[in-house]
Image 1 (cartoon, rainbow, N blue to C red):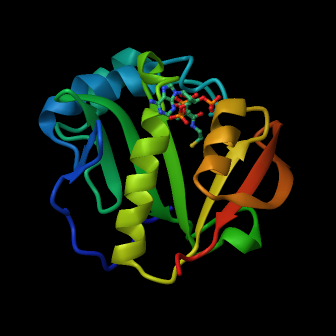
Image 2: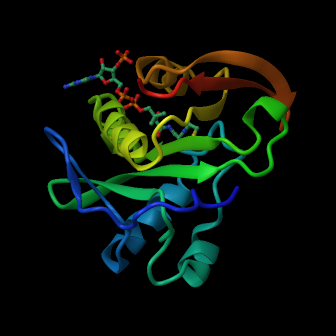
Length: 176
Ligand SMILES: CC(C)(COP(=O)(O)OP(=O)(O)OC[C@H]1O[C@@H](n2cnc3c(N)ncnc32)[C@H](O)[C@@H]1OP(=O)(O)O)[C@@H](O)C(=O)NCCC(=O)NCCS
């Protein structure tokens, strides 16, 4: 994966009904450790990383690159949205396309925050890189992620086997 390429970055913070999307800051570091060390968050993502390693090795401002959005609720980070360029992908249909990923802390699940935040990030993407589709890969067993992908307008391109599980590749057509 690479970053998105030529986009104006960072944008002004994006405000939705309940959330703010903005670039990562040093004050988010503890929440990034929580997110990346969480077994629940990584149940379908190959497992979490050890907390002590994260605490030692995460940069002072984690994940600061164009297309990386911290999602904030009431001034505190609840999730991370990743829009990257799939320069390498197992499936040819996805190679070179923008790729959406999302990770939210379990305490924030089940409130529609991920859907609200991802829709806003995709609106930003449509304005920043008009006419481009977006792809998304998730384990088909990851029911919450599959539901979210459908809500966001992704439809199935294909299923394939990788990382010891069935994967679902979805695509969202360019906005008109
Ligand atoms: C994938 C993930 C982001 C989904 O989070 P989520 O909270 O389930 O997703 P949503 O924001 O769509 O909210 C889901 C539920 O909130 C409920 N909800 C409660 N209040 C709501 C409100 N005010 N507005 C909208 N929905 C609301 C909805 O009913 C919805 O349930 P439904 O899908 O059964 O209709 C989360 O499970 C996660 O972070 N998983 C770990 C990381 C991961 O696996 N990522 C995927 C690969 S990149």
